[in-house]
Length: 67
Picture 1 (tube, rainbow, N blue to C red):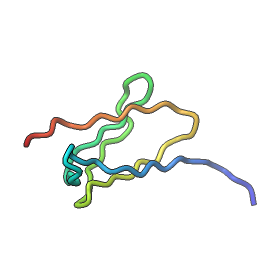
Picture 2 (picture 1 turned 135 degrees about the vertical axis):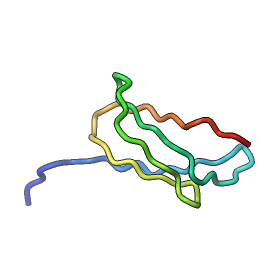
Picture 3 (picture 1 turned 90 degrees about the horizontal axis):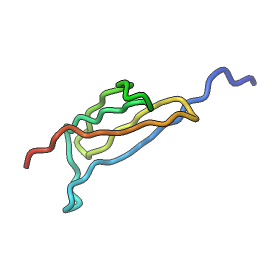
């Protein structure tokens, strides 16, 4: 078996300081040059999954949260 491509998979959860999961939060992923790579929404449990290239630096930003 030969490997044609390798990806990383980041699974994370967005929570409030109370520990409550935050649904429908926009998660933006940027590369090291601040270029937008992906934009995702958290699910009902506050989770999101990002798939990217290994050996790359990524920055994760959340849209403003309104309480």
